[in-house]
Length: 119
Image: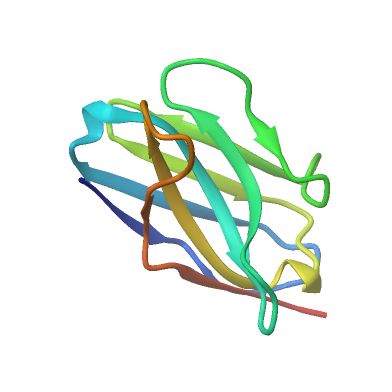
Protein backbone atom coordinates (compact mmCIF):
# COMPACT_ATOMS: atom_id res chain seq x y z
CA UNK A 1 0.00 0.00 0.00
CA UNK A 2 1.27 3.45 -0.94
CA UNK A 3 0.05 6.65 0.69
CA UNK A 4 0.21 9.94 -1.22
CA UNK A 5 -0.05 13.48 0.11
CA UNK A 6 -0.26 16.47 -2.24
CA UNK A 7 0.53 20.10 -1.50
CA UNK A 8 1.16 23.35 -3.33
CA UNK A 9 -2.25 24.22 -4.70
CA UNK A 10 -3.74 27.68 -4.41
CA UNK A 11 -5.16 30.70 -6.19
CA UNK A 12 -3.15 32.28 -9.00
CA UNK A 13 -3.83 34.73 -11.81
CA UNK A 14 -3.82 33.61 -15.42
CA UNK A 15 -0.27 33.45 -16.72
CA UNK A 16 1.07 32.60 -13.29
CA UNK A 17 3.00 29.61 -11.98
CA UNK A 18 2.40 26.98 -9.32
CA UNK A 19 4.38 23.93 -8.28
CA UNK A 20 2.59 20.94 -6.83
CA UNK A 21 4.34 18.34 -4.71
CA UNK A 22 3.34 14.79 -3.82
CA UNK A 23 5.11 12.76 -1.16
CA UNK A 24 4.78 8.99 -1.26
CA UNK A 25 5.09 6.76 1.80
CA UNK A 26 4.50 3.12 2.64
CA UNK A 27 5.52 0.43 0.14
CA UNK A 28 7.31 2.85 -2.16
CA UNK A 29 9.68 0.12 -3.37
CA UNK A 30 6.82 -1.19 -5.51
CA UNK A 31 6.12 2.08 -7.33
CA UNK A 32 6.49 1.77 -11.10
CA UNK A 33 5.18 5.17 -12.13
CA UNK A 34 3.53 8.27 -10.72
CA UNK A 35 1.21 10.74 -12.30
CA UNK A 36 -1.01 13.75 -11.94
CA UNK A 37 -4.68 13.95 -12.79
CA UNK A 38 -7.20 16.75 -12.40
CA UNK A 39 -10.92 17.18 -12.10
CA UNK A 40 -12.72 20.38 -12.97
CA UNK A 41 -16.15 21.17 -11.52
CA UNK A 42 -18.83 19.15 -13.29
CA UNK A 43 -16.29 17.20 -15.34
CA UNK A 44 -14.68 13.80 -15.14
CA UNK A 45 -11.17 13.34 -13.84
CA UNK A 46 -8.58 13.59 -16.61
CA UNK A 47 -4.96 12.64 -17.09
CA UNK A 48 -2.38 15.43 -16.87
CA UNK A 49 1.10 13.87 -16.77
CA UNK A 50 2.99 10.72 -15.75
CA UNK A 51 6.58 9.77 -15.11
CA UNK A 52 8.25 6.38 -14.69
CA UNK A 53 9.73 5.98 -11.23
CA UNK A 54 13.15 4.76 -12.38
CA UNK A 55 13.66 5.91 -15.94
CA UNK A 56 11.71 6.37 -19.12
CA UNK A 57 9.64 8.81 -21.08
CA UNK A 58 7.43 11.39 -19.45
CA UNK A 59 3.98 11.81 -20.94
CA UNK A 60 1.65 14.80 -20.96
CA UNK A 61 -1.89 15.59 -21.95
CA UNK A 62 -1.99 17.70 -25.11
CA UNK A 63 -3.65 20.52 -23.18
CA UNK A 64 -0.60 21.00 -20.92
CA UNK A 65 2.32 20.18 -23.21
CA UNK A 66 4.91 22.93 -23.20
CA UNK A 67 3.46 24.51 -20.05
CA UNK A 68 3.62 21.77 -17.37
CA UNK A 69 6.64 19.74 -16.32
CA UNK A 70 6.55 16.58 -14.21
CA UNK A 71 9.66 15.58 -12.30
CA UNK A 72 10.65 13.34 -9.40
CA UNK A 73 13.06 13.01 -6.53
CA UNK A 74 13.30 9.27 -6.00
CA UNK A 75 15.43 9.68 -2.86
CA UNK A 76 12.74 11.79 -1.21
CA UNK A 77 9.88 9.76 -2.75
CA UNK A 78 8.43 12.96 -4.15
CA UNK A 79 6.96 13.89 -7.52
CA UNK A 80 6.44 17.47 -8.66
CA UNK A 81 4.28 19.22 -11.21
CA UNK A 82 5.46 22.64 -12.25
CA UNK A 83 2.69 24.54 -13.98
CA UNK A 84 3.60 27.61 -16.02
CA UNK A 85 1.39 29.93 -18.07
CA UNK A 86 -1.67 28.84 -16.16
CA UNK A 87 -5.08 29.36 -17.72
CA UNK A 88 -8.55 29.53 -16.15
CA UNK A 89 -9.32 26.17 -17.75
CA UNK A 90 -6.55 24.61 -15.65
CA UNK A 91 -8.73 25.15 -12.57
CA UNK A 92 -9.62 22.00 -10.69
CA UNK A 93 -8.63 19.55 -8.01
CA UNK A 94 -5.28 17.99 -8.82
CA UNK A 95 -4.66 14.42 -7.71
CA UNK A 96 -1.40 12.57 -7.39
CA UNK A 97 -1.46 8.87 -8.25
CA UNK A 98 0.93 5.96 -8.22
CA UNK A 99 1.02 2.68 -10.10
CA UNK A 100 2.77 -0.38 -8.73
CA UNK A 101 5.12 -2.22 -11.04
CA UNK A 102 2.68 -5.05 -11.73
CA UNK A 103 -0.46 -2.98 -12.00
CA UNK A 104 -2.00 -2.04 -15.33
CA UNK A 105 -3.39 1.23 -14.03
CA UNK A 106 -2.85 3.76 -11.25
CA UNK A 107 -3.92 2.14 -7.99
CA UNK A 108 -3.17 4.63 -5.20
CA UNK A 109 -4.48 8.18 -5.00
CA UNK A 110 -3.92 11.26 -2.89
CA UNK A 111 -6.66 13.40 -1.43
CA UNK A 112 -6.20 16.17 -3.99
CA UNK A 113 -5.17 19.80 -3.88
CA UNK A 114 -7.23 22.69 -5.27
CA UNK A 115 -5.82 24.86 -8.06
CA UNK A 116 -7.79 27.96 -9.02
CA UNK A 117 -6.71 30.20 -11.89
CA UNK A 118 -8.46 33.55 -12.13
CA UNK A 119 -8.89 35.38 -15.42
